[in-house]
Image (cartoon, rainbow, N blue to C red; front, side, top):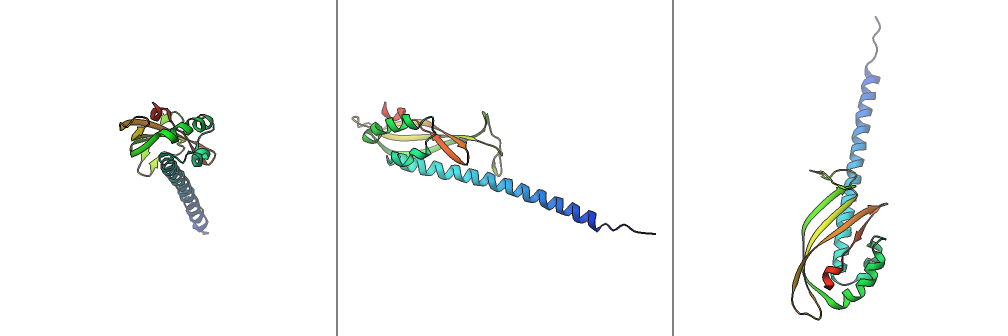
Length: 156
């Protein structure tokens, strides 16, 4: 009686499971990296935006909004002073549908995010402190995040 060794079958199954785990780990790492890039971009943009360093953030502006932002930012720099900024809501989207949130973050494939931010600011010539809630749209293109900022609420 000849016995067929089970070793090759077990090692093949083990290799397949190991490969699946590695691929899942890589997908999770890519998702985390994408989310970390978004957090970093959001932070850098808003710190420089609130400091009125608008020329520094031009590369972060989405190509469809860059020219308008460059024009509006001249008046913005001269007239607006920020006092307080608070992130009050954040939503992730996969295409046009809201992405599912898991314990690890948003579902894989999310490519858009909307940050809802409350600003307290003054717009010259007034000296009255005003509050506005503004939605910042972030789009993932290529390997980077780009924002479509709204300057108009600060210039009213």
